[in-house]
Amino acid sequence: CNFNHVLDFLRYLDQFGKTKVHSQDCIFFGQPTPPAPCACPLKQAWGSLDALIGRLRAAYEENGGSLETNPFAGGAIRVYLREVKDSQQKARGIPYKKKKKK
Image 1 (cartoon, rainbow, N blue to C red):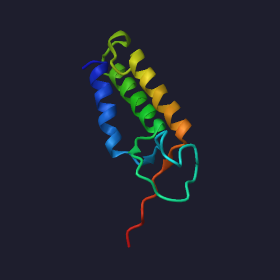
Image 2 (tube, one colour; image 1 turned 120 degrees about the vertical axis):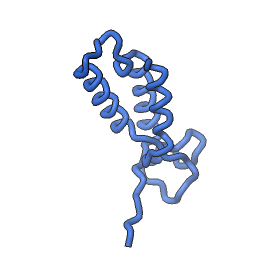
Image 3 (cartoon, rainbow, N blue to C red; image 1 turned 135 degrees about the horizontal axis):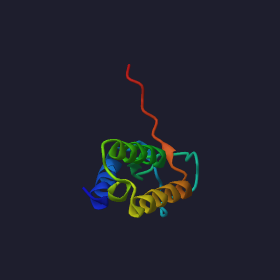
């Protein structure tokens, strides 16, 4: 396992996200509460990804892995998380509100 596998996993997780992240060409880009629905994708929230990577990094080291070989502690992972955070801040990601089951 290396950082490329971790990045692929994080991108894979995006399809199961519940945070609306508006694209730059969306009319609701930058609005915290848009008045109507749009076709922008749902993605994983930055905080969830950051917490997951933190837990995986700690688990790797607790189970005998060294800090130097930890695929969850690489610079590429930090850059990816920073890019996700920046894009979600700019778009003001909106949590998806699930409808309650009756």
